[in-house]
Image (cartoon, rainbow, N blue to C red; front, side):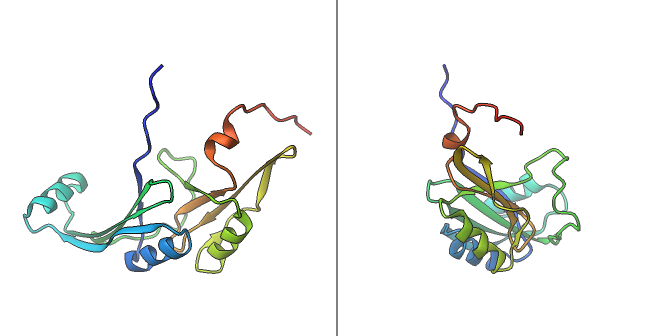
Amino acid sequence: MAIAKTMNHVGITVTDIDAAAKWYSSIIECSILMNPTLIVDDGGYFSKIVADIFGEGFESIKMAHLSTGDGIGIELFEFSKPKTTKPENNFEYWKTGIFHICITDPNIEELVEKIATTGGKKRSQIWQLWPEKPYKVCYCEDPWGNIIEISSHSYEQTWSNYEKPHQH
């Protein structure tokens, strides 16, 4: 059996990268690996890489790199040209693509409250997934509209040995 690949990072677009880097480091408690940095399509080596990735129309971007406690990266982006905009409906879960990230915190109530009182939003109640197990989840969003699920336990703890819950 092949060994599962590891998760490296997730990229998140925001409208204010300086505020987002501060928010993710203070509220989600990520470590900042690289402060917000402006990258301009100036013909330099790194700007050629970024221009190749983002294609025609890219002129400049700010990027920051953060890390979670288990080493998963959060790469923040703020596009200058074209300008980052926040969609009116930021929860189009029915469309393909990533629609949320999930952060694990055993004190789920405290983190959800911190998110809600620092410009973010609590989107759902805190739910205990099954009556006989302590696993809790809550959907929130950051101040820029990105969806963040908060889970009380690791993914493996929550979903390994899953037994279909009884319908009541």
